[in-house]
Image (cartoon, rainbow, N blue to C red; front, side, top):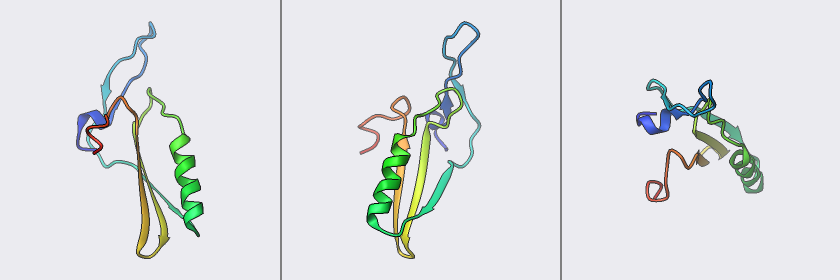
Length: 90
């Protein structure tokens, strides 16, 4: 990700306090999946959205590209609230 905020993570120090770490620039991870139907795509979206973030390890931005057909895809971006807000996502 180009923006530092999207490359942030928060490992704990020895006394348990979070420490801001900004990883080097690089491409955002993209997971790809194939769905046989819109219902299966919706299930994949629900599952991916329910995976908790690991604030210590990151990433705090996840992308899932679901292929329904050669010209029909769903792109899901899941972002932890610490790196994005409602205004930014509009």
